[in-house]
Image 1 (cartoon, rainbow, N blue to C red):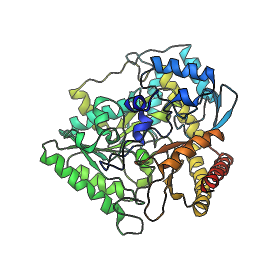
Image 2 (cartoon, one colour):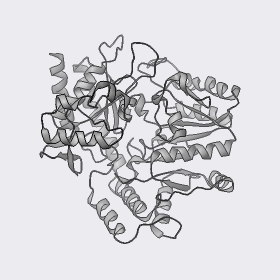
Image 3 (cartoon, one colour):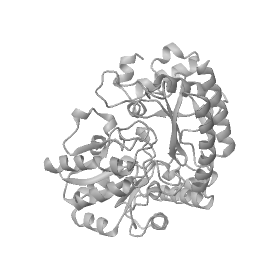
Length: 470
């Protein structure tokens, strides 16, 4: 497969690692983990044949790594390939409670053997799950609408916001990703250049206090970054679009796992609501305990109007949705009809309810907080030892390790990030790369990640950083 072909068929992971800047020195980056030419790199004829079959019939078929991982089994925090090699999974947040959790497998198989159909019939598991899910939310967020994917959830959230506000415009972050429906792809600013966006989209700089316009040590960082929303609001109002919603994920995944100032969301929410818009918390990545709290927005003492959910909700099973207020849900129901054949089916909701119970009963949000504290402490030691590490940040078990060539200029070390991602796989560790410049190592393992797992990650990362420096 040629490089030209690889770029033409960029998958999400590639697009998330590129900069939207029009600067000629920041051209689109071929995926941090995507292979460009398997024919030249693969020595295993069996693997090469499978790759060729995949490319022949699977659209957008670009794989992670130059030597793609042929994963055939998952168990807890571990993945296994077809050769019996074992990998510590530091990447897959979808398998939230661990790969193939016995209780999830049992719930899925038992319900699938009994009934799976749409929600136009009564079924207790659907209602019970919605009750249990709503119980985890702040007062007033008590109506659940189920979808199959996070993209659908965000799309539905925007429909709600547009109908409730009477406006069309959306304020989002630069280099954001919220999904791949037609509407939500247009709000995913990492997928297009700034001069190719519809006039209902206004993007603002994320609160990057490491390399953004306002940096750590300055006063009133939350206010300074929140004030950037003023111009976006003005632009949408001047164009006649108005402000329907502000959509943001609390972990700022595609921006490099940022830590927003504590008061940032409070101030942005106030501005959006004053302009007549709704505040949508995209919890597709941050939700279900990953940040050390059940919901990412809880870290900032705000209550959104709509909370969207996905990825970890079914620990690998496709279930997603949103939670909103009765007033918003009723207003929408008066003017529109929402039905989704597969969402909220008995199997999906039984799986979702089981995942929710495991997270609560095993106190996995607290586990994320505890293990993250340990891991951040050890990463700080590596940062002191290795100049390549410019910054370590994140919420809970969603950690970004930003690599730089120089700590003064902050020149992104994107090549080093690619090398480390590849070499960590060879060491039996699966990690990702993200950020506007593709130079942020992303650590977002299943919620059952332990301190021992963290120590193994640190050991292997320290080894590779030392080799790169030699």
